[in-house]
Every structure is written in C-alpha cells, then in structure tokens.
Image (cartoon, rainbow, N blue to C red; front, side, top):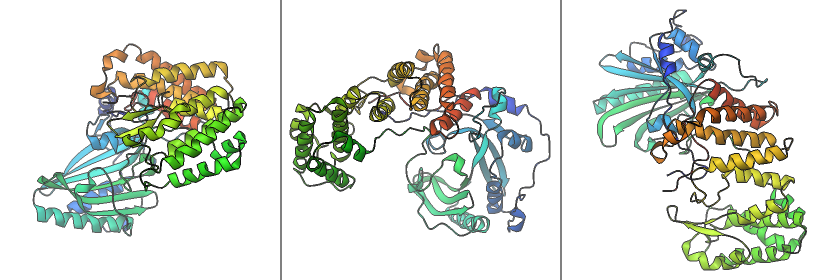
Length: 500
C-alpha cells in the first residue's frame, strides 16, 4: 500500500557501473587498516572481533567511491539490493562494495555503502560524464555480519565485539537501539565518537531458527541512518507548507473571543491522550461560530479565517474523538459549512479533505498565505483524501498546476520550491519506468516518456538552484540534479499513490 506522501522504494537498477568499476585497476597500494589514529588502539587482527573492528575503522568521512575502488581493486561494486534493510533503512545510498574474509572457521561479510556528496557552496554540478560523477559518491556506512552456528560462541563473540568497539569509540551511549529487526536483537551496544556512530548486536538470522549473527555497523551523518526510533530515514526534502496560525488569526480580524477557544483546542490537540466521548461538540461548536462570523468578511480576511478553521480541525479532531466512525453525526454542522470528510477503511479513521484550505487559496491565492497553501497542495498531489481518491498519478496534477503557476508568476517568492516539487513529479515518471512502483505499477507504461521526463526534471531542478546555496530548495535540487546526471535511477516516488 502506498499512500499520499509515502515513498515506494525498489532496488536500484544499475547495470553499467559494476562492470565499469570491475575493469578498474589499483593505482596505489592499499592503505593500512590502522591509518588515521587506529595505531593507538589495541586491536588484534588475528581475532574475529579484531577483524570486525578494523573493517569498521575504515569508515572515513570524504572517502569517495573512486578512491575506495583504487584501494580495494578486487571488491565488487553494486547498485542494486532488494533486501528490506537496504531499501528502507540505510538511507539514500548510491552504491555499495562487498567483501568476504575468513576469520578462523567463521566468515566475515562486510559491506561499505556510499552516498551522494553534499552540495558545494557554488551549487555547481561538475561537467563530467555519468561514471565520473558516480565515482564521487562518498562513504557513509560500514556494515559487518558474522554467522555463528553455535549459540554460546555467538554470545562470546558479541561480547568481545562490544569490548573492542569500546576501545575504538569510547564509552557506550546509554540509549536503547531501535532499528529494523532490532526486536530480535540482544546484547546491543551503541557508541559514538566525533561524527561516527556505531552499534553492535547479536541477532537471529530468522526469528527462532537458523544461525545467530553477530552484527556491527558504523555510520556517518551523510547516510541519514538513525537507530533512535523506528522511522526510516527520509530521502525527500519538503518545503514549509504552513502559515503561522497567530498571523492568520490577526489577518482574519475577528473577535478574540471567537478565536480563544480554537487556539485552546489546538493546544490541547497536541496531546496524544484522547478526550472522553462527546468531546467533539466542544470543538465543533467554536469552529461553527468562527466560520459563520467569517462569511461576510472580504476575501483576504475570510481566507485567513478559513485557514485557521482548517488547521484547528485537522490538528485537533482526533483527540476530540472526531476521527471515529461513530462521530460522523457530530460532524454534520461542519459539513453544512463546507467541510468534506471520508472514512479511510484501511486506517480506521475519518479523514478531513482540507476543503476550507482549498477555498482559502481561491480567495487569496497570490498572498503569503496563498503561497503556503499552494505548497501544501503540491505536497499532497492535490489529493487530501487519504485514500488516493484523486488517482494513482498525483505527479500529473503537480506538473499541470505547478507549471501553470510558474508560467504566470515566474518570479514568485516560492518559485524555487515549486520548481523543486515539479521536478520531483517528473522524476516520479523516471522512477516508475525503472520499477519503483513494484507490483503496484506497470513500469512499461512509463518507459517511452521517461527520457523526456528526466530532461524536464533536470530543467526544473536547475531553475530551483538559481535561488542560491542559502535556499533549502536549491540545495535539495542540487542533490537531485547530481543523482540524475550521474546516471543513477531514482529508487523512490513522491506522488505515486495507491490505496489497496
């Protein structure tokens, strides 16, 4: 199931790069594993824990894929991995290098992951070939696995790795590890030194069966990996899509007595604790009074009032028990004032369609408020239904509305944001043509239009970059531009929506 705003990830379909790298020859001798300070650390390379530590110690910020291949000429460079771990939890890597080595009777499997380089201050994309750009990917994560058939031996090795990582990275971080599959991990330890973080654990290869696996991995911030929660790293940057609520209240210029209960409800709506049954009336009543008072207002003021009502309802309705199916009768007064709702069966919740938000932009489309509403509409693919009611191809709506807006207001204050999002919409076509929709999409439908979509995506990203390195949209557009020019296939989609 892919919902609005969700990302469908599939393996990177990259065939030319591995062959090109496999043809490379080493140009300099391999660097000593302890180089860069490891000589001062007690590591015994004849032990499995020592070999694991030396593998992790090779993680050095700024090491490029080209440099790595020069130092490790026999390692295979790949760009495709269909495992859930690699697809969803290791960040937006562009390639990885693998190595297997014997450690006594055990085998150490190490994978080094590389990521797109950060944007330079000039936001200039090097004018080189795709392969040369791909070689500029920089290392961001090192992952090591050791399968141990014997349970006692696995426990002993995990403890030895813990001690060894302590000598490398210092005192253990006193926090729980939450990561993909970590419910089946034991003897976990988390370390941090400078910009490097590391985790070791003992895990089951499959819950309740098979050999136990001693795992250790270290990562840099460029990987976007997080072990502090169960949320996968996000690849897609998003512009700000909200307008300050207190500013909207001031723009509406309605009686403060009407606004006070709404703001109070919004503050209460930030709590995760639901109120008692029937609490919805205490939200619906103030909203209805606020909206009725806004009817005779001139367009800019009414737009601000509609925006306030929209945001209060959206943020507070679940806590006020209005997301439950039994609450539909309580929503009748709001429906009479234009609000539209639908029941999302798979999520088991009532969804508000942001009809007041849409109405607000129609009344005040080229104001700062209208600009933020447009960004919200673009981010949603112009579909707030929560069930993909607008159809799977939200990118078509983003392209149509975004390009029409840019043609009308090419110098808009939000032009860079809009260019970036329209670029992402065209990028979806490229991703879908290469299988990013998986079984939910027929990639052959998009093959013919993918080359032109890639060209248009790059055109919009380049336009977004004109805002300069100080603009977040420009920096995000640089990364997208670099990725496409490097010949890398997008693994995720932004606006492809299937509710199934």
